[in-house]
Image (cartoon, rainbow, N blue to C red; front, side):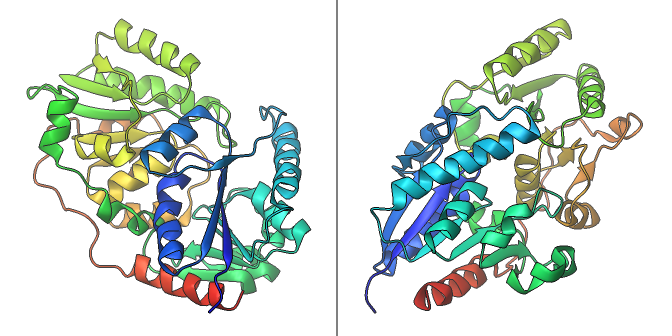
Length: 344
């Protein structure tokens, strides 16, 4: 088969590790790979850690409001179109890159995207040929577009986590974590996320107050410098011992060292749940099917109000339930993508 050119776009930090095994697989098939990315420093640093060297294509518009985010997406999509005009791509692949979906459609390139939260904005799905989602999400959510849906078994985290799990003891030494403290990984919500609300901010304050009642050591994973300063002020005021990691690290390394993980977003709490690390989410958006499934399995505890905060078991992790069993997530996705590429 004649080598084809497959275009991957990295639109957000977690997408680095999600797309890496797919990029590697496409290369083993003998195809050419083009990787583009937004120019955010944390994304590029993570790409470097993963051994990826994307071509940076960014938007100039800020994305602080819904309207500006939409305009920024369209602008970046247009810039991607210009960037790709000199390259003959046969297929575009991303994890929810709306800019890529728009650019690929405008160039006549078929596109595949992934999503595992059905309540996010789905307006750009019209530009995709295929949308991969976990099989716990019902196709009917997409109404007339459900013919585009490819349901895969398990969860997207099983695509990459099995190969990334490090030696917990090595991480404990590297981060100089105290043996006599409960190690808590705390990830606040994104300040500019579509799901952000005053309720989440209130829950975050109550959760930190709860942690102050125990001998904790908090690994705080702030998303921005402003957020780091805010969190530092709160943690110091509560006399909670903590650190903000200074170097770029794979999230799974930090999660594996924790006794529990608490997050206001989605990716890290789901990764912890899949790994079998006690996981609590105070995400205040509409609960998605993936979180409901992990909650039903006893792997994720949702903190929906201040009364749920009392359910936080702030204690040293015992021998856990371990990673989810042998679900054929990776095999299914790679086999299906291989077939799509062959017919692109």
